[in-house]
Length: 480
Image (cartoon, rainbow, N blue to C red; front, side, top):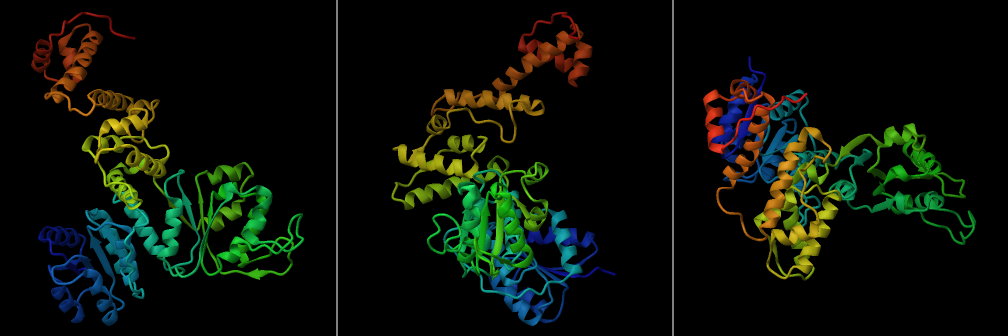
């Protein structure tokens, strides 16, 4: 017997066919339709154990359909698909009561996994009114960012403590703000504290407040950040720089939900959601005795890793457009980057991550006079040829690819704003093929049969390449 009936609604017949076949092979009975009206007839008749629906449908928005489904069948899980892959899509899906959200194009294995979870534990989340914002707090459509959006969407209606890990400039505070702004504490205060920016002797007073006379210079009672964030969210950035004494106080807050001010004796109850962030390895700090292990586990309830920009280079064009629009809003003329400039930015390593990209775009928008910013202007600002994303010069496994990419980048930079003459593909292949064949022939002492075997080529093909490239076959010594 089928494992259950799945109702699929998508106006794209190809997607309906793919889902029908994939879920059918997984043992489910699948019924497909291209309209919201067709889906609604099945749902209102009590059919189906799970709904998978697109957002953009010809007769109704999928988000508007979910609350109607939840009113008559609150136990029926709904999985939302969408090609509009932004954080607002994920948030709206969660607030409407969707079981999960899948960005298009989706991975069939991931889809099957979501279906299995939904069928095993149907969701009955309360539907909330979705929020709409002109400005998106996070930018990017890469798979790495889609996963971040989905985690945020699942956490907005909880008070779970979150630990955000990532390099400097990856947007940790933006994620913390999104958790607050789209969560149930959105009407409370969001308070951000950078532990690295506060003198160590003042951290406890900064966080928990102090009483008059608690220390030299404390002439009045001081309000701490916990009191300021009451009912809202407290974001503790660079948590790895927090002194041990303050860590002990913070642990008590997480364990007992109360704290005392510096110099005070009366415990104060607190209702604050904690979101922490770090660019350091806290486990290593624990081994060095600089961070409490029990505090680490209290903070690391839900870990989130933000990918560096070099791991999501496909998001660079969207980020560039976003920062150019911001510059335009600040009074600068509208500008855009040419194709070569965008490609250069996509292949740069970005040690400063998104913050570095934003600063670069702002600088280009101010200093470049033309409407179109060329690759030469970007190269002048980067000061160095872009490197292959995710590799270092010393990485032997990628050294050849990195060397070729650096060579090609310099070659294009030398052309200025012009493109090189046609026939580049054949010229580059010859540049690589000539030394490769020469070295293999030398290594086999000029034996073309062995060289062809080493290269994985037919002997006649090798002979033709030797002739076409004008190579001289020398019986050299095979290297040790």
